[in-house]
Image 1: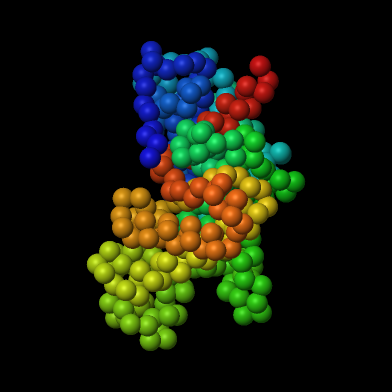
Image 2 (image 1 turned 60 degrees about the vertical axis):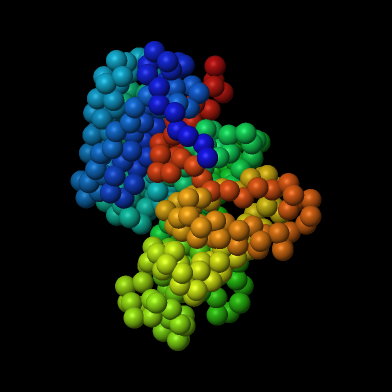
Length: 341
């Protein structure tokens, strides 16, 4: 597993980059050097109802505090990167209609942040930023191409091909959770946008909760049968860790649904590496249940793909955790900077 490195300003390699990762409740801000090592980071509250201009004003104050702690100034930073959730127009620097930020709709967030910071800002979807973080200094650092799936309330993603992040004409590139894995008339509905048969409806935490509740109500035998109304992906994981056979089988089935989507992605872009990130990793590499989940994903992929792709494609867990977003945002800023010098 890759380990995030923290360095002092004296140890770091200039130039420096700020990475800003906006979430529903919190904003993580980090200062990185040219090699992807972190000098320091800080977290502030999003305070969504106060609007994006107030948030970007406070981001600037936090950046100034961060630089002061590192004995640096804005003159030492060459560019900043910003990752936000929801729909965007990346080229125009606009937030469109992020579902968890109702007071931030149709807002020129890049110009706002540039005005507050006094720096040029690179912009990305938050999952794309996380993907770039894993690609730059995480699990994907020895690869030229990579796909990341972030497993949380929904399924986000990011695609990097030959060192370039795929954004797309409509700023929708890398939205892996919305690929169709079930074309049948009775396919499950996606929680975001109501699309039918999307991967997110089967392999996100919200999709897992709904699937599990339906199976338990239909009579599945499990230690969770008396806790149906309070079922969560975390509780399914905990039950599997305690030896609940249904929970373990259910987690493996979720891995197989992921494998269907991964097979399609690999057949389309041939990345060489698929990384599973996000909070819903069923314990990840540190638990037997997480390892069973990963093996189920690999098994499902191997059963559906070609031999040379099976042997030439790795599927691994992410290694940067919640820090991938700000690191990736800084990394995208770094990439944009180096294209101009």
